[in-house]
Length: 88
Image 1 (cartoon, rainbow, N blue to C red):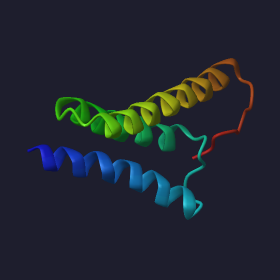
Image 2 (cartoon, rainbow, N blue to C red):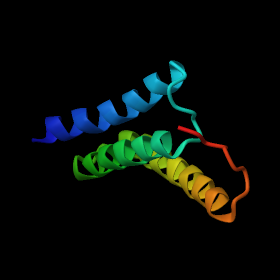
Image 3 (tube, helix red, strand yellow):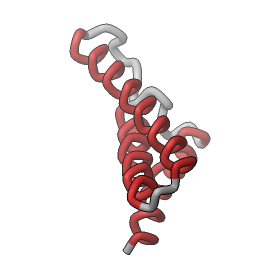
């Protein structure tokens, strides 16, 4: 089961990256950031359970940075600033 969870988390992050590289998603779009937050959070939890500290550091920071970016995008949307920014 652990391997399935790792693959799922990795696929989410890699999908976001690939879609951004192909110009399908903007790196400041909600979809891109959600894929990164969810994927990295899943991997961070798995790393914590497995006591893989280096991997936990990488994925934990990735999740935090993505979450901060997501909150910023959602706040901008809510206030109406940057209308059209972060288009998906």
